[in-house]
Amino acid sequence: MARWTVADVPDQRGRTVVVTGANSGIGFETARVLAEHGATVVLACRDVARARRAAARIRAGAPTPYRRVEPDVRVEQLDLASITSVRSAAERIRAAHPRLDLLINNAGVMRPPPGHTEDGFEPTFGINHLGHFALTGLLLDRLLATAGSRIVTVTSLLHRYGRIDVEHPHSLPSGERRSRRPYPDSKLANVMFTLDLQRRLAQAGVSTIAVAAHPGIARTELARHLPPPVRVFMGARMAPVMSWLIQSSQTGAWAPVRAAVDPDARGGEYYGPDGLFHSSGPPVVTGFSAHARDLGRQRRLWEESERLTGVMCLVESGQSLSS
Image 1: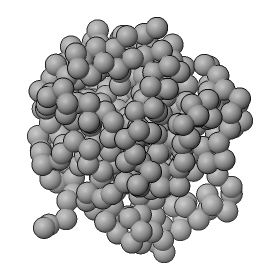
Image 2 (image 1 turned 180 degrees about the vertical axis):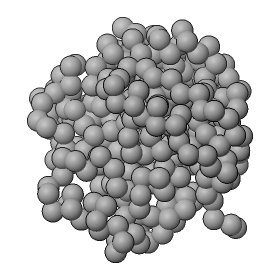
Image 3 (image 1 turned 90 degrees about the vertical axis):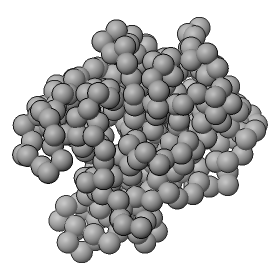
Image 4 (image 1 turned 180 degrees about the horizontal axis):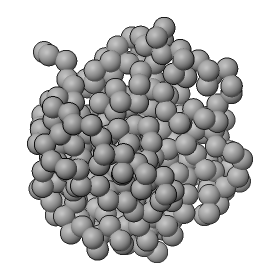
């Protein structure tokens, strides 16, 4: 089978897409490709000024073989560290876009400064998982009303090192609790959420699907809080000798894009690079960790996420309730 590239992206005209964290890195490149293929793309970002500059860059981009229309790019303010902000953003998106074809839960942090989210959660878990869980629930009815819609959640290779003890819900990395592996745990939660969401969608008999993807190891701003030697190792200056292991954000975006648009994609699949250690290369279907596939843990994580966010995702009717 030929290697998949962005040249394989179908025409996206008529589709409305929301991409979180789309002002830089994987999110920006994902939004750019979809907009250049004709989708109306909403950049849902915490920093509105940066998002507007990103939207301007997409509109002003050089012509490409697949740039079929003038990109239609919008901006919405979304702070995943605040459930109040998530609710407000969802309301604005719903008001502006009655049709929603694709939600890409991309935004994330790794090793942020010490502190808590507005709601008292450990920031890595609160932003990477709980914020996206709430946003998905609040937009779910719009997605279910659109035939063939998708929810794509961007996770990480490091989900394999995550361990979430949902047997004791209060040990989740929220409030005063701390995980020894906050980033892998949050990425494991992304995977578990995708799998549980897909099972619920399938049981409801709807055409909406949930898919996961990871970018391998890519040069993005996600590494900005890592130790200096690691940042140098992952920086652009090392690209000529490290391309076999570390890829650009443009190529890293191929897996989320394929998960979003491949007509052959199935719910519950997981896309990632096919190269050495699955760190770089064209996207293919790959596998989750055994821990992620535990049905009981998935269900308990879902229940605890509803409790923590106050958003109950009712997949059967495509509704969400806020407590």
